[in-house]
Structures are given as C-alpha cells and as structure tokens.
Image (tube, rainbow, N blue to C red):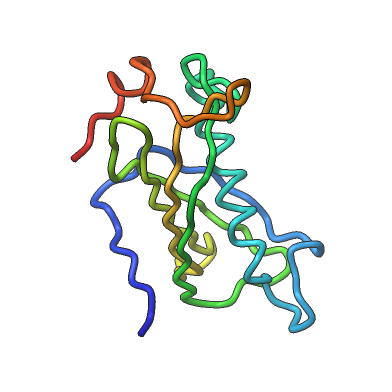
Length: 141
C-alpha cells in the first residue's frame, strides 16, 4: 500500500531551490533522503518570512515528530525546483505542513511531503502549547 498525501487548494508559501551535485544518489538523480532536506530548507525560509526560526517561534522552538513522502518523479542535477507549503492542520501543541515539489521547467511533480511539527521548549526538553503568535495567524481544522 502506497502513502497518499492529498494536496491543499492553496499554498501559504513558495520558494525555489536548485538540485546540487550533493543532492544526487548513485543513480544520478535526486536522492530520496534529500527530499526531506529540501522540505526543511523551504520550512526555514517560510519561518524567516514571518520573522521566526526553528528555535524561536513565539518564544518556543519546533521539533519534527514524523514525516511521510510520496515520490512522483525523478529530479536531476541543475533542475530548478519549486517547493510550496501549506499549514494543513493545527492543534494545541503543533501543526502539519504539506509540501509539494515540482520542476519549474515542465511543472512535473517530483514529490509530496507531510511533516508533523510540535512546539518544543529546548531548555526544559518538553512539548509545549502553541504560541498565540502562531495560532492567531494559522487556525486550521
């Protein structure tokens, strides 16, 4: 049974990245483990666009607790990729991000990713409640 990640109707944020030689595997295409790195880079850029970081979003940090990837096509050295993300679900302690990676030149979908993120206090090493600065901006079912 395959992982199926539904796409949202709209995107909160979009950024572009280029496939580098360090992103390739021995098959000379985008390595499966690099997909999560591309998603993380997009997430960091989205956070920065709001003046946040992975260590400071409303006074607390973030920790990724799981991820799912649906591979759709290969990516190759030099491909310009568009990574779109949307907050698709929120809770009292975290949120889900859905990502889509497409190749810009032909709009071929490379992958879909879903990550679950919790708010985390790195000093006390505990999961914490969603900061108001986030919940005011992103209230989703």
